[in-house]
Image (cartoon, rainbow, N blue to C red; front, top):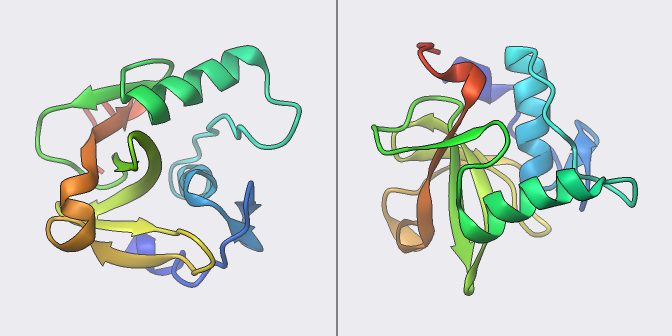
Length: 139
């Protein structure tokens, strides 16, 4: 879990994409950049292109494979994205630290490690998505 420890305590900030504050996807953007050197599309602000918006809408609203993300039915690995339902649509993600454990941030809270294999998140889980650059890698 060593990579995840340095991301605990980042404050929530809507459309935030750095250590001064993040939303759930912004935390994924930050982690992928700092841990893997992978630049994810930020999807922040009014400058998001139609193509970028389509990609994130499909990932978060429909939980389907589009862009760099591939849904995986294998056990989750560190740095996979766990996608969760809020209400009727997918609207939250966490970064897998270990199977059933994620790093995430929501609401007016700060980033933290939390189990999703039981409790409130268990029944909201849509699935796990792996960035295509992580296919075949053991992180």
